[in-house]
Every structure is written in C-alpha cells, then in structure tokens.
Image 1: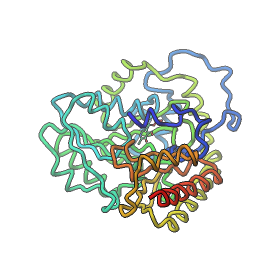
Image 2: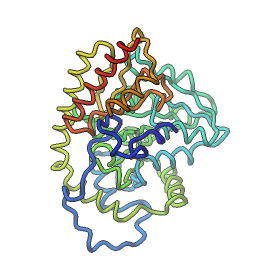
Image 3: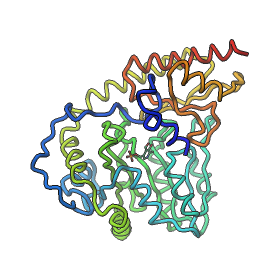
Length: 366
Ligand SMILES: Cc1ncc(COP(=O)(O)O)c(C=O)c1O
C-alpha cells in the first residue's frame, strides 16, 4: 500500500523536515510521564487484557463493563480481528471510502463482496443512511464506519449512528464504529458507540490522542457476549495476549490522562487555528473543516489544472514538506491529507506556507 511505503516511518524521519503526514499528536517521550515498571512480572498476561486497564476504559460510560472490553495490539489489530471473525468470502460488507486502509484492505484480502459508500466533498463528506440502506443485501454481515473520520476529520451525528445500528439489527448484521480518534473530539465528547446499542462494535486505541502509537495498545468493545468470545478466540490465535509492558504503560498513562492531555489539547487548538487561518488565505485550495481528530482532507481547486506528480515532487524535494497525497486513500492526488496535531507550531506554519510557495512555483512553471 502506498501509505506504508511512502510514510515518514519508511522514508526515515530525518528526511522529512516539515512533517504534515501524521494522523496523531506528537509522540510521547518516556521521561515526560511517570512510570514505575521495575516490579512488573514479564509473564503471559490476561488473555482479555489487564483487568484494571479494561475497567478504566469501561468506566467512562454506562452500558459497558470491563467484561465487554478486549485489549488488542492497537486499533489496527482490533479491526483485523473484527473483519476476520465476521467476514468470509460469501459475505458482504458495506464500508465508507475513503478510509483508514485496514478497514478496506483486510476485507479485500478475505475476498468478500464489498459495497463502497463514497463520501463526497460536495456533501461535506456526510454519511447517507439511505445510501447504506440501499446497499444492504441478504449476505451483509458488517457495516463499517470511521468516526471521527480519517482522512477528513468529519464526524457522524449520533442520530445517524443509532439509525444505522437499528438497521444492522433488523438485517442481522453488525455496525463497526472505528472511533480511534474519539478522544480528539475536543468540543463535544460523543458516547462510546458500543455503549449505545448491542449491534455496535467500537474500536479505539491510545495511539492518536495521547501520542502512544509505539506501545500498540487498542481495544474493541461489544455488549454481545457471544461475539466477544469469538473475538477473544481470534486474538488468542493471533497473539495470545498483549505485551504486559505495553498494557502497564497504557494503564499508568490513562490513570493520569487528564494531566497529560491538558497541554495536548492546547497544542491541537492552537494548530487548528493556524490551519483554518491559512486555509482562509489560500484561495487555490478548499476544505471541509475538520471537527474531530487531527487530520483534514483539503483539495486543490480544479481550476488550477495542476500536474500533481510534479507538485508533490517539488513539495518533498525542494520544500522538504510532506503531506498524505490523495492516492494514499484511493482518491485523486489533488486531495491531500494534512495532519495538524503532530508538528510543533512553527513546523506546521512553515509547512503550510511551503504548500502555498509550491503552488506559486507551479503557476510560474506553466
Ligand atoms: C481510523 C483508524 N483506525 C485505526 C488506526 C490504527 O491505529 P493504531 O493501531 O495505532 O491504534 C488508524 C491509524 O492511522 C486509523 O486512522
């Protein structure tokens, strides 16, 4: 997948000066948090996941208990578990597009039938209940949403999620809500989707909001005990249990989450203001404003008639600035994902300025 080959992790962070590709906040450094792990026993952990960690995750809401929370290796493996448990070749999936690659690539690898719900810029990337209803087939097993959405930063109203959950129940299938960016919904905290309805499966992690992608801790949640057991069985087949060190770090971090998250929130708000102000002045581009998360998906206006290959070459090589080009999400390259939570304020400002300078230079080349 291009997103894997072209990501800064693969290119080497040292080659990327202005990194606007990331979908998380800045990475947390061990010395900046208080950890005590010297007495930790490096045993196989609880297969479901460290009980205290599960209790802490569940404590945020009613309707979910620690017995409904399965700890996984990041949200990515939770998505893999859900897809491989629920989908077989003869099944059918409805999934929104663009999307985080795993939500599409794992079902493709399974070989099931897929109906894509293509979100459109012109509709503010909104999810249409009617379009999903029209796509339901007798073989549909899963409807798959991402909210807040990657790459657009849009959110799905709770009413829509409830309508889709009921639709799933009526049609004997499940609604997956990938809410990996939920804690980055700063203005309005949506309830955990799985707490709202027994047909909903929620997936999330500590990667994006807390800058902890390196400890690979995520989870899935469902009120459906039978389904939960199947997910647990899949987890056991893949990696038995989580790394006890990762679980312990996540637990200790989340115990003091409010303290650690305060400066992160300030940083995101400041950077988001920078982004919105830049977008107001950059008339060659247009954007659906992001609501949740730390990514947005603006596009260069059609009138620019840009050679996008040349544009990204110049942006990367001359301006040392990297964004996620549209093809990372199977979209045309005049779209780009900009991550505004990861860079420090100055890096974001200069990176955005560089996009404008590069557009200037492209005009001069014509
Ligand atoms: C929507 C979404 N879901 C899941 C993931 C996987 O996150 P992780 O495995 O780091 O928790 C990502 C990462 O980019 C994502 O954007």
